[in-house]
Length: 311
Image 1 (tube, rainbow, N blue to C red):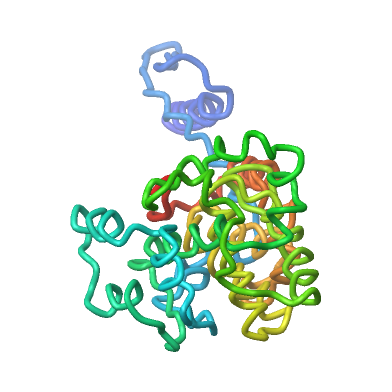
Image 2: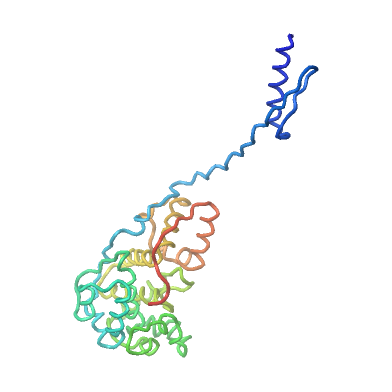
């Protein structure tokens, strides 16, 4: 073997050894008559492959459409709330002067009955929350009189976020509790309202709508009462309730949609609304567990919108 061939072989062999064994940044190659310093090739760590999760990306508009018809109307409920002092018209309109001023059509809701079906959008979701909220705390219903707020916490009823936090009436929210017959319900309708309320949770706490201690719970109760009184089928009420919760808690429900797609291979349009609204997913504890699982898998989406438990 000639000298040139020998040197070439030694150089090549040590170069591959340096890469494989990750030795010092420079490897000294020596023979009887020469020396050569070879730079060590950098070791590139291969990234861990992303888990092959089916459908881990969910478009926000799958959960939050531009608009959605809730299939009910306010009728004369808002006018009754104003006439009873549950809503102080001046306080209400002044609140929105500091935000996005109410449109003429929205202002009419405070003055005259409306038979037009309620259309929810991301822009008016907060307004609808503040219209349904006082209905939920003031309308006389078994959920309030026989539920936790009217029994176990009867003497503290004005201290909850849903009652004490309602500052847009002519009286304190606690004094408005279960006081007015805004939407009269038959015994059968009362039973249905109670059943549905017990099955719908909200991610801001661990309570169902049967314990409407915050604005979201009270507003959901108001929606259920309107829907039942207007003859909406139970399955449809759950479907519309899921839409409402999604607009009020957009981050939560886009995460839940991601979870169902990634973990169960179920598109959001095919989920069972009653199941999703239950404690396993829509309570604070249930949602928290889903959130942690999504974080661990690196598939946590980010969504803007929603609001807190105040006006």
